[in-house]
Length: 302
Image (cartoon, rainbow, N blue to C red; front, side, top):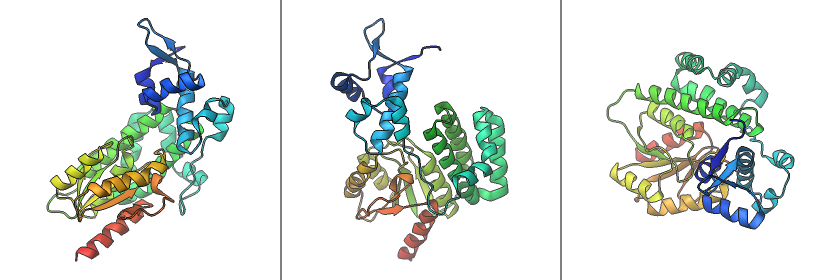
């Protein structure tokens, strides 16, 4: 554990950089500098993986890889983007104070106490307020802490997995029966973040929608096939702030082109904020906007 090393497949999963990109950078820029294991396969020390993860974040923010790979690590840390507070949200300090106990439980790795605290909030607030007033701001708080380096990657994963479990349990308790509209919820390839989808699913289900959750990272043609198979009225995608913003309009246009006629396409999450208008796509700047869009859709069907 003193000098952990990772094979190229593990580095690809951890950083989001493909094996081909890693090999090209090695030849072109002289970084990373992997060693070799007993079988001659590339193996990367932990400090290089950390640097590659930081470089990927900065590339997603618009920086060029060649310059980043030649920049000292302390300068890279200074360049790392800080997530802005969304308009109308509580200040970072205010959210941290209000949700500080939850953050402490995650940092103490106390899964049982965290789940109990979240279940108490759910019982007290009800599912809608719980999603909007606890899960959404705490997700932003955890994301900001990860970007600042004040929370470990495994702690962020612990938060995500425990919160996913709780939301799915809450959604499963909602009444069934005939519901409308039918909404397919998923994300595009290379977008693994699922909490935004679960929060949207909870709110849509509370409003009487039939939700078809497909998980994350669905190929575009498969999304279109699922929409047709389920006779969906709406396809709803989620993009996190970590997803490269420059790729989103093109992906939405491609999906719009292959979706069945009459199926609405919605896109929400931190990644679509301040995104230019995309023809044929409803951009949802917030969870509240999602509910407004649902109400507007129903008016058009009346």
